[in-house]
Image (cartoon, rainbow, N blue to C red; front, side, top):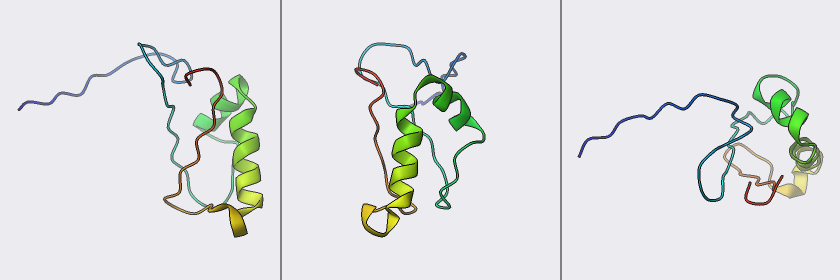
Amino acid sequence: MTSEIAYAHGDATRPSGPGNKIIAHVCNDIGGWGAGFVVAVSRRWPQPEAAYRRWYRERATSGFALGAVQLVQVESGL
């Protein structure tokens, strides 16, 4: 079986193709938001930043930790 990597060019906040999409962002566990890819995310949608900051503030009971996953719907199918 041969596998190849397909490179796509464009705006990562506007995924293309059919079906539902997930925009993945991997981060550390210090609760910071405001540099790199998240700046583009925040420009398009307020929900991910608000959810991340709330998740961090409530970390004692929210499950916030390295390896944890948080999904935030920003549009239908995204």
